[in-house]
Image (cartoon, rainbow, N blue to C red; front, side):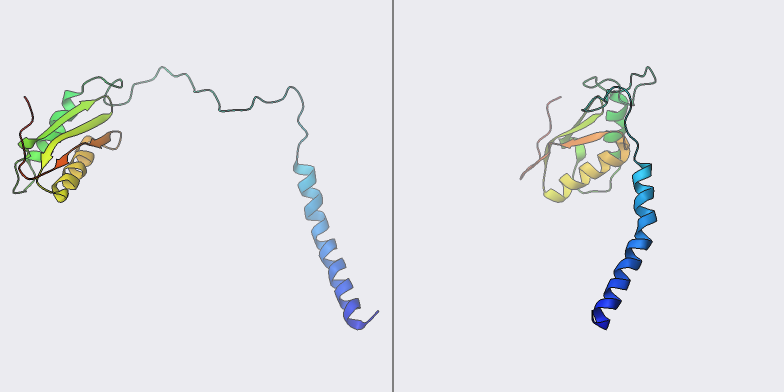
Length: 138
C-alpha cells in the first residue's frame, strides 16, 4: 500500500466513524407505524360554524362593497368618467364591466377595486378597451 492509499484509507475511516452516530440517530428517530394504516388522500375539510367571510355567501349580491368600489373609482383624479364602469359584487368577487379608453385605465380600475374592496375579495376585470366608452345599462 502506498502512502497516498494509506492516507485515503485513514480519511475514509474517519468519515465513516464521524457519520456513524448521525446515521444511527436518524434510524432511531424513524418510528415504525402501529395500528391501522393512515388514509391516503386529502384531509377532510374542518367543519366550523364560525362567522362567514365578508361578502356573504358566494353569488349573493353585496351592495356595501359595490358602493365602496364605485366611490373609490369616482374619487380618482382621472380625465375619464368612471360612469362607464359597472361594478357588481357577488359573494367575494367584485366584477368590473364596461368599456374604458385604454389599457392604463383598465389596470387602474382593477387596482382601485382591489384596494377599496379589501384583501378578501377577488376582482374579475371584465373591462373592454375601446375607442369611446359606453355607459353600462342601468
